[in-house]
Amino acid sequence: MAVIVRAGFRVVPLTALVISGKTQPMSSQDHPQGRSQSRPLSPHLQIYRPQYTSVISIFHRITGVGLWAGTLLLVYWLVATATGAEAYETARDLIGSFFGRLFLFGWTLALFYHLCNGIRHLFWDIGVGLELREAFRSGMAVLAATVILTMVTWIAGYSVMGGG
Image 1 (cartoon, one colour):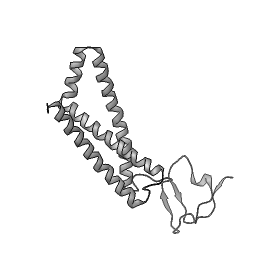
Image 2: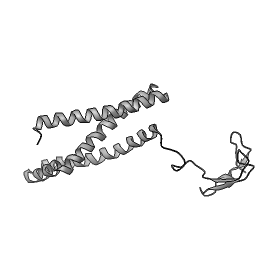
Image 3: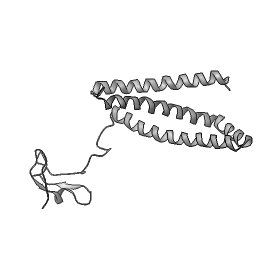
């Protein structure tokens, strides 16, 4: 019989804790405060309040997906350019429209966020900035750098292109 030992708890048969991944009622002997309670076997989003660091991490994943979508638009533009003048004009009109520019703005924001947060993770890989206060500050720096880099890019782009 397999057993599991948890700190502060008595030895409990493994089969008593895990049965098809569903919530198992705890007896008063198993519960640390001596009361019977039904609880999930693993933490769930409904239990925990989102924290700043977790939100930053989730945004990093979301921007990764956004970069993938933007790359599809880039591939469309390249194929249209190689296909001919008419296809290029259609792509240019689509990307130059209000929604196209809005998408490009979001893609630029995602690009710089993912870049800055990736640099932050490189510092974490060498052991720098792992304290909670430092992680919070570096997260704020990532957000600030994202906004600044995005705005500078778009201002420079509109300056070069004539604002059209």
